[in-house]
Length: 69
Image (tube, rainbow, N blue to C red):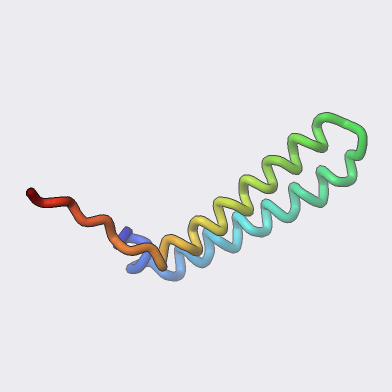
């Protein structure tokens, strides 16, 4: 993705927002011990942390080349 290489500040800001939201949802969900809503919030927080990890790793992926016959 050439877009993320060209917009470093936007990617960094998006990673910061998704990381903070993920940690916040995990902590808030943890306070709702014994409730199904707390578990769902923690799962959503993990999804945000995985999205942050994906945004970080996008920079190191090699571009996929089309195979020629």
